[in-house]
Length: 508
Ligand SMILES: Cc1cc2nc3c(=O)[nH]c(=O)nc-3n(C[C@H](O)[C@H](O)[C@H](O)COP(=O)(O)OP(=O)(O)OC[C@H]3O[C@@H](n4cnc5c(N)ncnc54)[C@H](O)[C@@H]3O)c2cc1C
Image 1 (cartoon, rainbow, N blue to C red):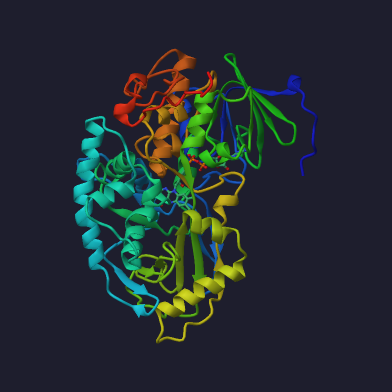
Image 2 (cartoon, protein in one colour; image 1 turned 90 degrees about the vertical axis):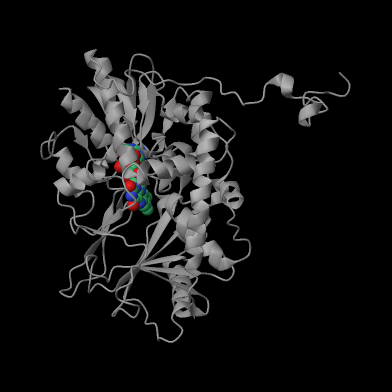
């Protein structure tokens, strides 16, 4: 174990660029630097491996007694691409590094409630009919620069109102919360739809599920091996950053063992959850415009709960099982089977996903409590079968992981693109990038990849004075010190419902 050393800047390791975090963003940024012949960088990573939220573990056992490898975090390549059209870069890498995957067929679904199998799948068609209306409405709000609202309002105005119908609630969860890890009430209308379109219309509506027994991060290791040697001294694993001191001249990064790095530039790729939970101390404190944007955007949680059985007692061909709880929206709603061909046939593994508040609740309780809840649901879904106890059971606690504090970001209703830009923008020599800084693809692996590349290219441009990233700008990021609402003060009057000045003081 490292021994604590009092901080001593005179012995700080020196480098040109300190890359904080070895997830998709950090590794991609390092590659962008390498591509411009900048080899003097150090990557600092909390965990013992690269990949960040693209993380796997072992679970259960196969017929020969060896464990399976399953993904705790990112699992799909989302939006692949079309012939001749743009391709998702993650898909390009998945093909290049032969990452095993299988197409998720969302039509391979059966629906259930507390009485067992009940076919309410036509509600999915109703939701999708509403979708074709509200996506157009969102486009109108965007292009006319109208005020944003919630997805709830958007869905409702397009005619889909689940109200107390728990089966409609389950369908809505399948269509919305499952992707964004927040409810429609908590999600931006405009940026919810732009986010969906940029991935699933620009690339394609296909999601391919990774079952590679080397782990999904195998492609990222392949990318890293193109510019990092084995045991490269520029990759510090198992190293925890605690303090980041920044200025217009450079950045000093301190680790929990007291060691430090002095860099001309630093790129912080820590998740929005890490930033929101003050897991790292910034010196000086981050400016208001940065703090406000960190506090405004949301960090969602997405929890996959894995079960292995001795047999596949559910339909072996079906990929998805949707459950509508009679009392609680989002209560163990989507079940996935790894039994079908192309996944892990013979594994008898099922996993169920919860998000948002249900994730917080489930992640705060012990395995036994959760297992009992999950098994009670399965026994409601399959009333005519003696559902056996699982032979293995496991789930991660994303909301509690000190290197992530959640799963991925989401865009709340009623905020502007400028405020999001403040999440991206550098503060002096300290840069920020990650899935959360992607306005186009927040939440996705490809968002992390594009943002890592851009930050790497911008920093490289500053170092070499040779800007290659002409498309999206060079050097420092734009930021907005002050964000105005759309209402000017002369409009704060009785005609707009404000008959009394909000600044009125009775005896002044
Ligand atoms: C459960 C789950 C499911 C998901 N599903 C999908 C999916 O199917 N498809 C998809 O495209 N995306 C999915 N995502 C999102 C995807 O995983 C992320 O968008 C992406 O991995 C983020 O990469 P990043 O480099 O921006 O951040 P990270 O991967 O979080 O990288 C940041 C790195 O910083 C390190 N770090 C943090 N704090 C410190 C510290 N103090 N000191 C040193 N290092 C530190 C972390 O260990 C981490 O490695 C999912 C995520 C989760 C959690």
